[in-house]
Length: 221
Image 1: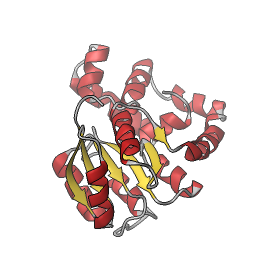
Image 2: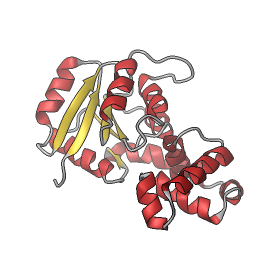
Image 3: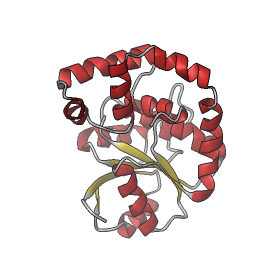
């Protein structure tokens, strides 16, 4: 399947983690496992994986995030900026799907998926694509399509950004690193950091995960 992808598996059932680990393709390297929100944040921060396979319902959620998966996404946005998240859950409820995508996950597949399917999804997400189990894609299109249809609102929001900030915003939302953005736009990494800070402030967002969800909802990618 190409280059090796480093993965952290986050799920509160050890038997499932073991089974998934054994079923993944050889090109997917599991560098760590976690069973709750606290251990997930710790492992992600320590290992900086390419992709996190994230269960939606985890123990340890606190505050505004109603599910453990959301709590992990919101806690790791700044701590692992290059990491992408793929939700892997037994739940196929529309509310769970939409909620975790809005929090910043790049895809959502169900636990009925085969090891080969999960491996392909991991590589796709690592490459910057969004991946959904077939019957779940409609939930996402319905949820974000309604927001995307509000073109006047989206235009007003984009008007807050300069042309350069819009360029940086799109690349960051697509998963580019600061170094990659700098090389693509022929600017310094420090300038990229300044633009990203301005974009997040003007759009009232707190992380690049929220920025990805914002841009996806408005079909700006």
